Amino acid sequence: MSTTIMVREDLMKMLNKLKKETGAKSYDELLRKLLKRAKRLEKTHFGTLPDIKSFEREELDRFD
Image 1 (cartoon, rainbow, N blue to C red):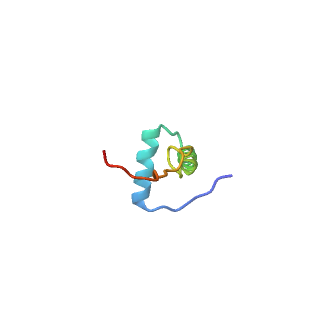
Image 2 (image 1 turned 120 degrees about the vertical axis):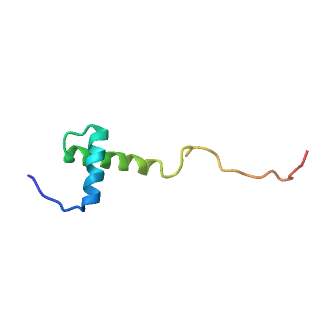
Image 3 (image 1 turned 60 degrees about the vertical axis):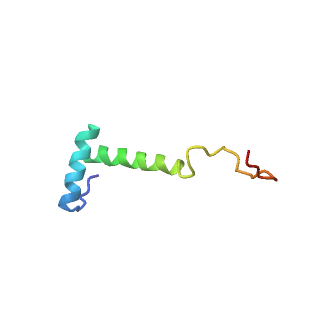
């Protein structure tokens, strides 16, 4: 099933540029790649070191 979406000319230019940069053969392929990339970013929402322990100050701060 095909459908048509309306986008402004500036967005169309960006999509064309991304299509060439990524080597996508169609806009469908490009949009799928962009959506996969966006989903991957959600996983890194909490930073690059999610298993690091929280910082705790020493009971007595010292200046040596």
